[in-house]
Figure 1 (cartoon, rainbow, N blue to C red):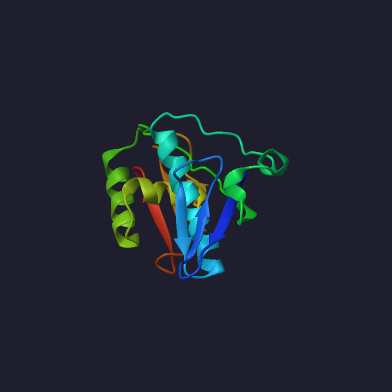
Figure 2 (figure 1 turned 120 degrees about the vertical axis):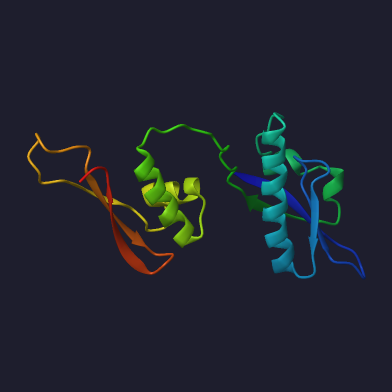
Length: 165
């Protein structure tokens, strides 16, 4: 989403940024580039706080809607793009104790939490696991799965056997 921001500059001051859709959300920067970066960060954090507090996040105003806004006097309007962060959701999984131990070892080696490592391994950061079913006949297959991680954090590939091979 893109929200309107007002860039203000008074003599002997930094560049200030305010948001007509979010009264009280302000930031500043010494340079135009810094003010722009700070605007994106401040607005993202403000929206995240609203979401965590259960407050409704307003839809972005249209440029025509704020054309006569008194707060815009002496300011330059620009757009700030923000993508509200998803809420963190707690889930439960079922796995063998030995599997969890192996995941924990890999997570620790990568400097991540168990959850962080599992999410990264599943969908993020190039750590997509490649699953290979065991070639054993079905009568001897006991939940054996080989998982190969291309671990970009450690700069190496890892193969881990999860299950009772």
